[in-house]
Amino acid sequence: MSNASSAVASGLPVGRSLIYLVVAGVAWGTAGAAASLVFEVSDLGPLALSFWRCLGGMLLLAGALALRERTPATPSEPRRRRLLRILGTGIGLTVFQSAYFAAVDQTGLAVGTVVTLGAGPVLIALGARLTMGERLGGGGIAAVLGALTGLVVLVLGGEGGTVRPAGVALAVLSAAGYAAITLLTRWLGRDGRGADALSTTMWTFVVGAVGLLPLALMEGLLPHTAEPARVLWLLVYVAAVPTALAYALYFAGAAVVRAATVSVIMLLEPVSAAVLAVTALNERLTAATVAGTVVLLAAVVGLAWQEARLAANRRRAAHALT
Image 1 (cartoon, rainbow, N blue to C red):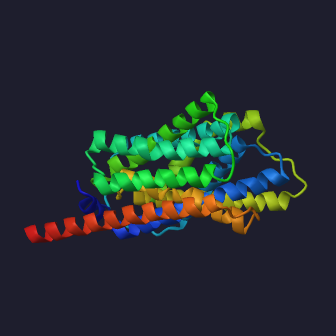
Image 2: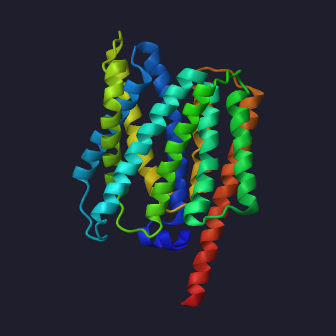
Image 3: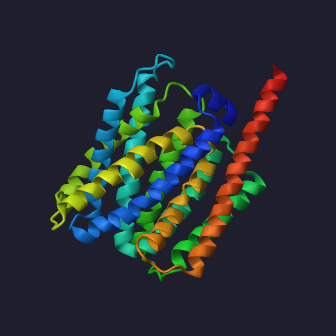
């Protein structure tokens, strides 16, 4: 099913889906800055933070679902399909986050980030071509290559990185988890049958929290800090904005937009993190930060424009046949 027809089936236009993905990517980028502040004032580790992130996101979305008015419009999703969606995305999310943090620990933040986020679009483009027949075309391939170039310049340009094989392997595993989430969401969203983004996201966090709990317990579940109110506020922020809000928008948008386009738009995460690092954390603005950001943004805009144009062409073709 085409992007346009899947958008109609799901009730979400392509243009709005692109906006959702942009907001999600920017929100994800703020999680790193918030995590840095948590690590500064407490001894909470990254896996424990991920657990509280999933648990908090789950509770917030459960509250939102309880308060939301029931809409009788869409038929319910088949049980086996819903189970596949929840378990697949939950396990993928756990692998994505845990392997990424382990990669950063092994090979450093810069190399871990570049390999994880750089391998993601490549794996997703290949997977989408093999499993769904989605083609990027010459312009799309150029945009992906440009985005990856911008990512490398942005992340590695400001600091040296040490490449360790174990860390690189973990980063590729993390990218595979991210690719699996994106491909599964897009594959299940192609016919638009009964998927509710808030409910799916909440149950995904249930699976993620259960998977992360043993690792968080080994690392140390509760933080020791002289500023408990500040840590609590930061944990609430991480659970609310880059988790509950961002993932709900991500799953809604990723069901409609081509998988490779989704992966490139989500590279806005390091752009958002870099902007925050300069404006809020007083890090130095470098030429590499500016150049990488410009190249990445140009690639994102180019692919988003191509996605909107393809959807418009398909709508016109569909109207011509009626």
